[in-house]
Each structure stands twice: as structure tokens, then as C-alpha cells.
Amino acid sequence: MASILYSDVRKGMVIVEDGQLQYVLNRDLKTPGNLPSKLWLTVKNLKTGFVNNVRVHPSDKVEQAFLETRAMQYSYKDGEEYVFMDSETYDQTSLREDMVGDLMPYLKEGDSVKVTFHEEKAISLELPQTVNLTVIETDPSLKGATAAAQYKPATLETGLKITVPPFIAKGEKVVVDTGTGKYLGRSKE
Image 1 (cartoon, rainbow, N blue to C red):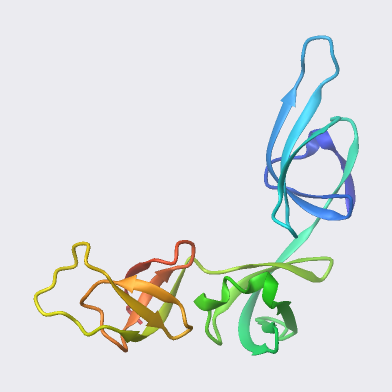
Image 2: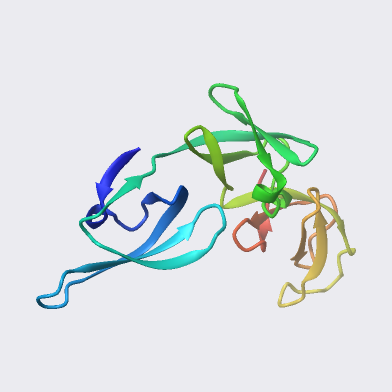
């Protein structure tokens, strides 16, 4: 890791404070007249998700964290861990359920994701913006129903529950937005 001045810290950087990785959400430099300048940083702890405002001296030093993002493929679940394989080296990495639990209903075996590492330790998982999943359970299609504001519940192959238009039937593939969990359309796959 490299030490940099706080004055060189920019939005989007990851720094190490008290042994914790902090993602810089915002920075605000205040220079009140003849008084020494103060730098306000809004940081998010990458482990806990806690957002905090901190005041620092611009001339103090901080450690800059270097992160590496790798393309990986979801392989399988092993107890309370999910195993991902590096697409280039075929190395396997296990991620704890508490780290990826909310994201797993969007993934099926073989799907590609991006895993971010810090000092060879996985710290986060990034899903693609959309995924294609098969509907395994939903009410039958309604004849004469229009798509206007009439949605019905559906269960997808991963166990994810969403709402879909009335014309979607069991066995169809749908596109789901991983950010919102909403139906986007029929899959062209």
C-alpha cells in the first residue's frame, strides 16, 4: 500500500483507516480565511456498510488501498459458502453467505460476476445489470388481460420471487434487473 496526502484523496478512492477499508463517497475542502484548511470526507466502511463523515488535515497521510477486480463464474454452494472460479486461472474462491446472501437469488450455476479483491482477499461481489431466469411457478395466463398495471407473482428458478405481466407463462425466460429486482421483459435467449 502507498501513503498519500489526504489532499490527494478523491471521490471513488478506497483508503485504509484504522485497518478498515473506506470507500470515499464525497470530499469537501474548507479554507476559512486565515485559519488552517480542513478536509471533510464522507466514507463508507466496505465491511460494515456504515457511512461516516470525518474531518482530517489535508497535510496528513493515509494509506491508499489497491483493489483488483476479477471476472469469476459461480460454481456451487458448499455449506454456508459460495464457490466462484476465476475465468482465466481457474482458481477457486469461497465467499461467505453473509457477504453475498442477498445477491444469490439472481445467480445460477455458471453465471459470470465480478469479484473485488484486496490483498488477495475477496471483499465484494458485483452482479451483471440484468440476468435471464426461467419462471418455474406462476398463475396461468389470463385471456384478454392487458399488460397495463396487472401483474401477477412468479417464482424463478433460483427461488427469487418477482411480479410479471399476465401474459408470462411457466417455463418462459425473463430478464430481471439485479439492482431493483424487477421484471424487464422476455429473454431473447
